[in-house]
Picture: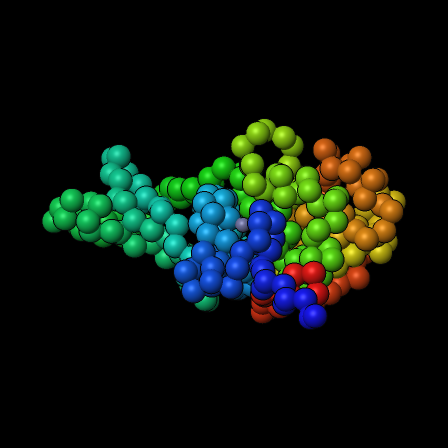
Length: 280
Ligand SMILES: [Zn+2]
C-alpha cells in the first residue's frame, strides 16, 4: 500500500511554525521585503502574518529611518528630510530639504505647516535673499538597537533565501531567531556598524550595499562564518564549519570587519523556497 502523500507545508523562517497551502490564499503567508521595502529591499521570502506584520514592521520603522538618514547624509538625490529655515530675528519657517542630482541642497517650505501666513512667504523670501540663513535639519534617528536587530533579521532571511532550511535549521541559529523575535530583552546585539567605512571608502559609500558570503580571511573567530553586509551594518551569522563556537564567544562584542575578506554569493533577488514536501 502506498503511504499517503505528506501534507504540503511551509515552515516560516523566523518562527519555524508550519503552515498549509491554504495560508497562501488566506494571506497568512505573504512575501516579505528583505530588507524593508522602504529601505530598498526586494520581496524575497514567504513569512507568516505574525512575523511579517507584527515583528517585521516594528523593526522596519527604525531601520527605514536609519536608511533614510544615511542616504540623505550620503547626498543621494531627492531624499527629503524635515528642515527648518532659521532667519535673523528668530524667524522659523518649517520645511524640508533634499539634495538634487547635481549636488545642490534645496529647501522648500510647507505652507500647511506655516499657517498659510502671507507674511511668512515674504519672510521666507527675505531670509533666502539676505544671505544669512541657517537651516536646521531634523533627523529622526529612531531606536538604533531595533534598527540593528532589523539588520540581523534581514541578514537571517537573506541567508535563508540563499541556503534554505539546511542552513537556518542548524541549532546555532536558535539564538539569532530568539533575538529577532524578542528584540526587547536588552541583550547586546551582535551587529557591527562600519562607522568609519571599510578602509576602501567612507561609511556613505556603503549605503545600498547588499553582500552575503563566508569570511575566508581575517581573525580566526570570523573565518568560516557568514558575513552579511547591508548598508553600513556588518552582520555575522554562524557558518557551516567549526568556528560557530568561536563566533559565539565574540558575539557579545562584535566589531567592525574592515580587515576581512569574504567569498561572496550572489545576493538573492527572488523567492526560492516555497511550499515544500515536508519529509520528502
Ligand atoms: Zn512566522
